[in-house]
Length: 363
Image (cartoon, rainbow, N blue to C red; front, side, top):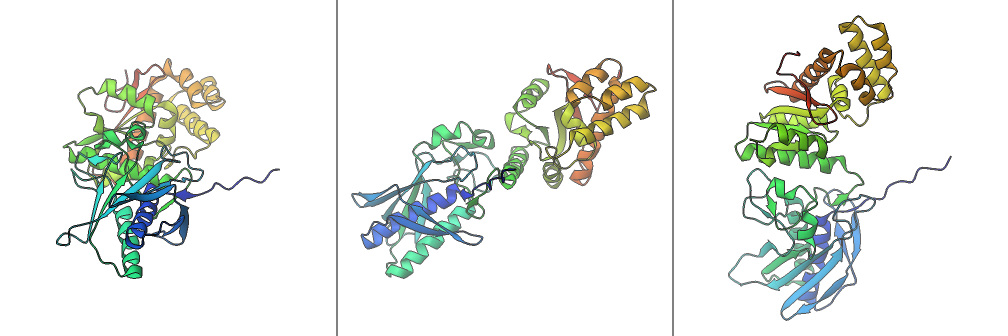
């Protein structure tokens, strides 16, 4: 059997921006354009990043690097991220950091960065300040500096992200809690969900509609047309952690999902991607056996290939079982949230019709 290849880690947009700043500040203070710069991570270790370009434009030092996300298929993989650095006013702040072309600007409350500011999170800000201080110590030049981060294709990239929904307009965010980007990072997705729920609360919402993907979200938006877009949050497979955030923010939850995910949630599975299909169907078959005196139906459900097939057995003759799955999913959501919030579950059929609603009695 072939050995499974280990996925390669890369570095974040924040690390890339720090590398560009390091190259530009080095050029401005020493007149030397380095070929490569070393950026320490906020956790441990470092990365050596080659510069794509480095030069002076009048009195401004400009450097760019290419972001290497490793094996993570992030939209910013191979993005060009740059920095423009100039000497500031001697009477001004020691370091002024702004976002230029392609860096988003925050337009809604609830995020780490205040409204009106460039979407450069605290991790990258810390890395950039640290890099500048090191170069100041090495050169003895304490000149105030004005630094602008830019991403030439950032506005185009942002159209493929959730930035607009979160209230970040005009470009991507400069992110990173440690500086390292790990493949298919659970941490990054969970952070996006947390931010989404906080934004929904900050704009005055009292509840969030949690879906697991674009299709279920589209159907949910048809059910709740009165809600603004930020009130809809795609939680993916991160059931438990999303409910924990909702509970911490005192936000009521509506799960708007398909039957397969609902069964996993009803079973209390914290991360719904990890569950095995046969265990889910056994759970479902046991539930059918408890509620319905029909041995053939129980066997059909137990031997279904997928929850979708099981749904077809239940939709007509046993809507009460589907309703019970929704009730149990809502109960799991409440338990993971720590209680104290209202939870509700809508289960869609495969055409987007509501097959059950835990707030309503089954017909």
